[in-house]
Length: 65
Image (cartoon, rainbow, N blue to C red):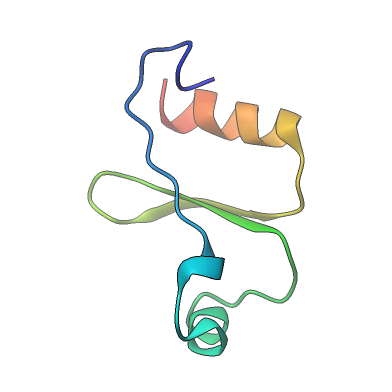
């Protein structure tokens, strides 16, 4: 979706982190997969549980496009 809208989109994963337990505690993650949409200022604007492509598309349209 980001590619189609010509948006420079970066994504990361907790699997790349060294202290997963601390990250889970700080961000109150209680299951997998968990998604966060973070704005340019570093503020979390959306957070949701579950791999749902329709929900992801709605969040991106609301906050990015």
